[in-house]
Length: 207
Image 1 (cartoon, rainbow, N blue to C red):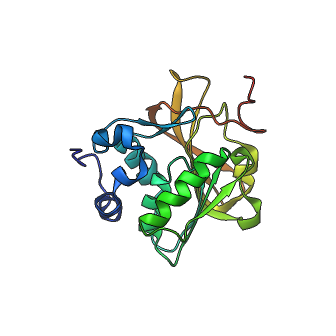
Image 2 (spheres, rainbow, N blue to C red):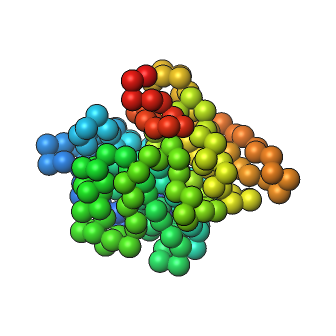
């Protein structure tokens, strides 16, 4: 069983307690649901380790009522955690390029009570301009730099979190905050390891 000792924010601790991780993973790895490790969800994708998800969420200062865009729905677990924090007065949209995973995420969100989260099948590296500007953007796949469309879709005063780096060994969880003058303030929160962000403004399929 995971010990959530690395969590600090009460609202995020409560979200981890309420969202059942075992409902978001395939039966073949369900016995590892509460181990602090990434798990395969098929199609070469993973659900992140809970400790990494905690870093991601706390670095973005999530709170009730925020409008959040997630890039990389995966199994839907991260989106459910975010939805639990921002509540029904907020909004959560998650973008997934793999149709089968988008359907898996949508099914998981529906059965756990988070069916109000919107799942979009699209190139996540381009964001989701229709709903912009976003208070927060959470990226769950690594790109060589933060995709410019995502920065453009971020609200002034908003924060974007993403793994940035060239390969699995050299990635950094990076938070970009859009300032009033339009400049971007960057902070880094340690090393990480994510699958590549495939898309027009990420890694190309053949890279």
